[in-house]
Length: 210
Figure 1 (tube, one colour):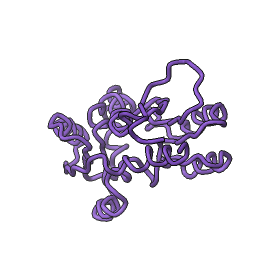
Figure 2 (cartoon, helix red, strand yellow; figure 1 turned 180 degrees about the vertical axis):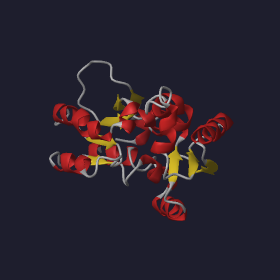
Figure 3 (cartoon, helix red, strand yellow; figure 1 turned 60 degrees about the vertical axis):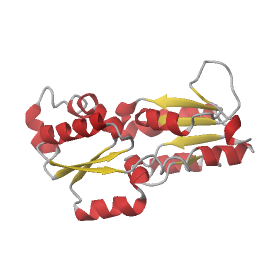
């Protein structure tokens, strides 16, 4: 199956047997960009699972069972599951996930990410999605809107916010800087693009269904 013959789509409720991506909702924009023109069904899980990584595997397990007869890719990195995601995928031969510990590691590239982490282990990373939805996912998601004093508890060991941007949208940088200000941390911006995601999803799927 050629790349040109594929088209990305959202689930329509109809029974499908083609390629399936089970994805973190925080990657929706990037996946739409990467999967444009590909005939792949994408099912997005709630982005707020970023705050509750212990719920990622229980959310994915029934979807993987349901898709047992389909070429399937999991658009999550480990994402704080502590290896539980890999243990789940071991029971589903042929199903792969995004590389690395976090999606921002994939976007930045392992070497760049390791350099940033080694420079300052107290780094809070943001992607475009997390910057745009900082209030909902972080501020409200962690209850800081109700208990702002918890900010210094939750982020006591952080010293900076690093935005790893995928787009050229200046509003994302503004949002990232505002997030750093609200957390009382310094701000740094690195534009990394989407190239880290592109080979991880469509190439794998097209090879399986070729």
